[in-house]
Image (cartoon, rainbow, N blue to C red; front, side):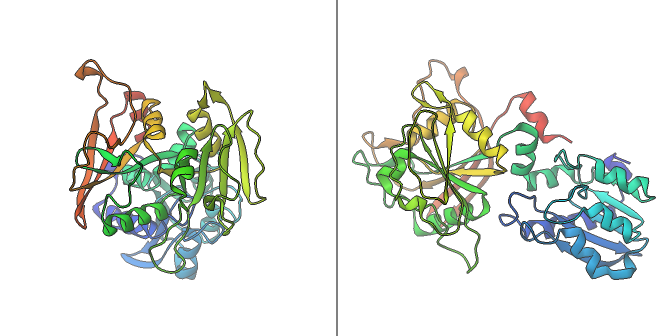
Length: 376
């Protein structure tokens, strides 16, 4: 069973509940996906759970623990195919088989090649009825970085920018604190917490001395990993972005650059494209290391290079109600265009007021080949 029309309205109710559970793990499960699970029998929810953190029990295991022996013959709704491989936890499909559940409905097949349909196949071979495709688009969007890393070989890239209404990010002198309001900056910190990693350029580190940490939110808020792109190895090893606070740090340098890094900083040589790092190669390296998604916070040069290389998936923009003038710095350095037909089209995804500023989330319109990634 794969067709959407084969599912009942009640199936959709329970899958929607599983998706709400999965969202509770967003930002905390990397490199794993956020997954929710609901176990139902005779219209009664027997158990439910969500994956809260990598290395901790998966959603199915928690739901089975809550349901106990009553799980026998029950329907299981899970936002991702139950895993069929052993990692830091045992295979979820085997736990479901031992519990003798009657039916498993997965929103979509796991793109991880270690499972990739194997979980559903093993369940079916052991007498469990299986189905997939219910609310697949919603479930894939929930774990867009995880899906893109495994299917396209690079992390999902969000370019964050804060600028004035006339598209300026700083004064000509570099002064930029603060263009946007405190509310917008706090919202930006929440965006950091949702992403697997935050990425910046060597120039931004040298100019602004950022920490790239989350400094708002409740105690225990997950800190993103930190990545610096540094073609020539210009960043000092004691830069505060490399502070040893228990969070993984990455220093992506040109293949011929020589740097001396603290033991907690992972130095990764990357091929060069002219005088700059090969950005596509750097993102592939991060994907191979398990990085699902990155939030880019940088100056106009790296922003422009990523846009020009078609490596940005989403824009997160904070627009301040102010004008900075022609001499102020632009939000991205891009080559000039001669014709409107050459422009890069965007699609609005969300617009909201945050404090006194406007938050705009926009996607870059993609080619038909790229758009196929969004289909089951």
